[in-house]
Length: 226
Image (tube, rainbow, N blue to C red; front, side, top):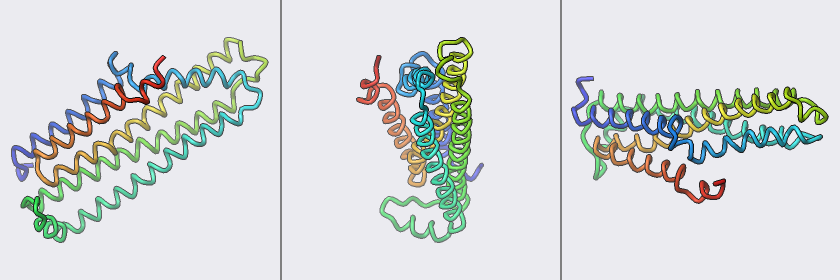
């Protein structure tokens, strides 16, 4: 990628490393386990234990369906976003002329524009796979809900083990949904690269700060704190 300048390469490296570092901290460190996503995982297991004690489990299937619908919406949106990015890729000459006429426009070569647009498309493709897999996992959760033991066996070891299995699968589905949504948020920061590499660094940092605050210092986080 010799057609990219050193600042462009540095900004792109910052974007990738910042994304990976944030995901690693939130998902795998003790600090991240105190975040909003991790707190909700504890409620998933509580949900499944409560499910065992319900004679009528329609409410549980409705909750799962609602979670699936959210994934379906974002998966569809991801495909639309991929199509939009590919349209930009096909209209490179027109977009360069329009972008160059803007007050903040910075001259870019055709190769630079296509590389940046292709990167944006890759982010949305990644998001689509995450949302689609999360949708499939919630489908499996629905199957496990249907296979749950009857209320008369709710206190047996097998019933409790089944609740834990279902909760773990629900956690995994939620984790992939969170990764897809994280890609959406960071795609907004990535748009700064079309202005300049320094703007990419600034917008990426801003998005990370917003996500960090929502996970660890938001009213929603305090509301569910045990």
